[in-house]
Image (tube, rainbow over all chains, first blue to last red; front, side, top):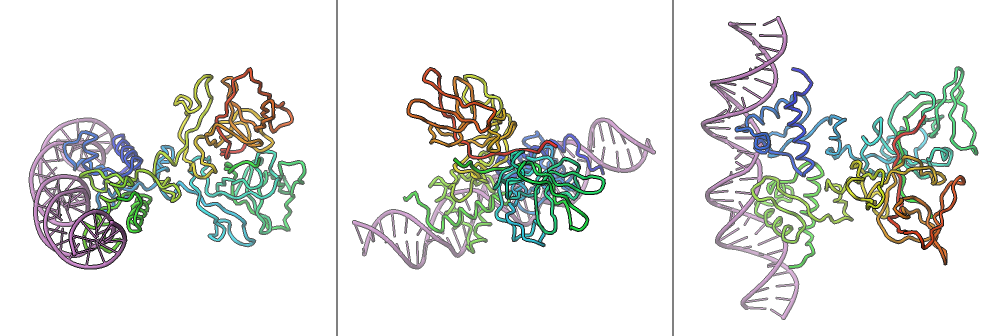
Length: 212
Length: 212
DNA sequence: GCTCATACTGCACAAATGTACAGTAGTCCG
DNA sequence: CGGACTACTGTACATTTGTGCAGTATGAGC
């Protein structure tokens, strides 16, 4: 069995997504009626196919028990997943703890992770003005995609000796530079003495309000 | 009949909202089981009460046919209404047309309007660098709350002779000033010759990505 | 040609579900 | 006290719905 969906299956999946957007999953009868099937069994079989391909999950016995599982990203199904339309907001990161440790999560924020490219995994509360030059201000929420490597010039969330910071990444032959975007700040030079890791890539900003 | 909900009715409503967040509305049986009712009729009657008070809408005959109607905002039901968890993104605003005219809407963006205070009504694509000083860059999406008046110092979306602009608002005895946040730009002075109106208050920013 | 997968029709049955009606008990109010 | 309202129990029945089984037609691949 191919993992790819047939046109028909894709159409069924789209219809299910549309129904969920409207409020509730379709019944077999709804699907049959919409596609002009004379029999609900046709719908049932399509659901089985979609389920076996991992696109949906069927709850046995329950009416309208259809859930989308893994969203086909490019279609924007993500809006239908309660768990995925929100992002954790990370506040003060304590030394020695992973960023996403639950004690750092201030709240869940209703922002679609798929809004950003690549997808955002969490929001990090920015402290300081070192990146003001590219419009990242103190208090802003930085959308971050988790990844361990970066290319020169990318804006990253990095950890140096247990301290988390946002800077532009620059790898030289012999050392790593973390560049601020503010003339009032000095570049940070990372030598091998210090523990260094990249936590993620900055993929966006969310800001609430403006000071008058 | 009071329009206010009893404690029990509020609890039922909360449960329905919770179920919808999980994916689908509850059946009478689900409600009865959750609250320990021996009979599904108890659930049915509560649903009737909620429906007659306008809190929910019942679809006759359909299983799980419960919809929330008016969200009690402060409870965060807004997340359950497909129409209210997203904001329209406004692109280029054509002269002479209201901002929210449908031809200006580029797409719907999954961002919770309640994230901002006051609530955001739409997102406006920012053009130009005139507000760079407070971190509003070219291409950013400005979250805007519709309102027709503003106080001195607030960042507003204003319309001057059919042109839409984002500036800091300053009312003087004899004239109105629109102040940029960028030394490369000059303040705009609005005299009585020109048609002027405030479209809304800037309440936040959403940005996708950073240029390397 | 045979086999396999897709895409359906048709029938059937049991469980889930919506819904109506009758009745009990407590509270609040005039 | 009687009446209205809330909050339930209990029974019953017609649909709606999920689900299984058998069968037809079509196209792709060997």
